[in-house]
Image (cartoon, rainbow, N blue to C red; front, side, top):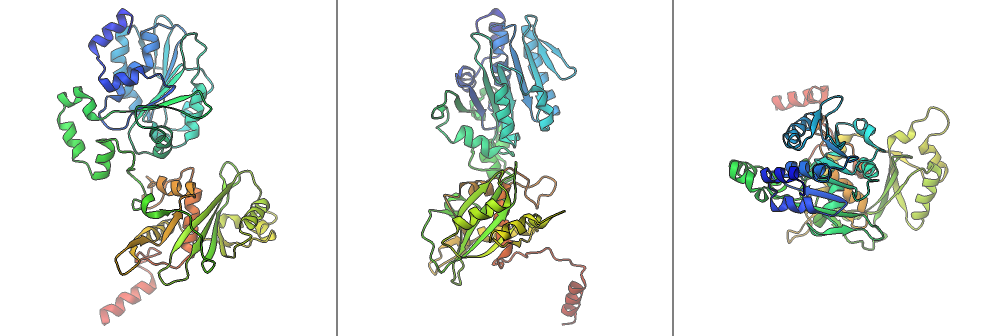
Length: 458
């Protein structure tokens, strides 16, 4: 840093090599971290304030967002230790913010709910720092933040940076946006766009200060269960702690499209939506042999489309196929006046039957379909249900499913759950092939008590 104040800060806080890469990155969007203990917090504190403490831009405005008000308080205390030595003053009400004598300001907020950051949307911030980005489940919220990342200050470009670890409700969209496009450390630019993104990984071993001062922390990370250890210790984005369908694997449960024999039965499953939720339809095929094989071979979705037009599209797409059964979201039969959405589709020649909407039992049925079973005498193992790799959203929807925190037996809501719901509707329409009971038994029912009595008398 160029000023005396900035130099004094760096004399006290020297960035490690990975932190230095982060601080010097020219990308408009930066993701830093990917593992625990990599020095993300301190690097973020310096990064977001550099236009103020280095260049003393009077009109500079920064924004820092964290997951909760409690974690924000920890960040504010740590930042205050640094900013107070540069002339920054902490103003705690109504929400914490830092103000410098020359006019620069850094505002803070939390991500507890979407309303908590509405007051920042539409404003201009030349630097935005989001701590624990994967805690944002809805990518649209991040896109809105991008709209507030802009600069009218000559010589100061706008940038947004985020820190995070693998896992959390936003794991997959963050991974898809930052981790998947190019190798770590390289700057990525989408075709036809001037916007750039960069993922800079940092492990605990990249933070020698922590390793020297708290060597037991590495031992703690090494002692974690395998998936959590791979995510937190080594920054492995291929594992997702909290995943509902832990058995699901693209290598095992997906396949290349193949020509489906005409002897296979065909089914469709529909989950209704208009806007913003889409209407989703999946096509399934089932082999006639005793070792039942099932495949999801097509997916489609519609938004702002009335039931009659959806039905016409499905009929046209399936014009050369004989659909045996079409199951659908039971809510499609609800109607306060006039024909229901299901009736409107039936008028267009697409009769539907209401699906069994038991959620927990439906997810259990999907576990059964994903379970590996012996399919030949040589011991080859394969799941009952596979998915064509062209059904991109269906695959991602299953991967993104996580346990609901309030009811771990259920799947938490997410933007792609309509595709997973279609698989669930289909699964509940088919006979069970697993040993897991479809329904949770009532041990106090008259039938159950009679059965226990007969067993005692036997």
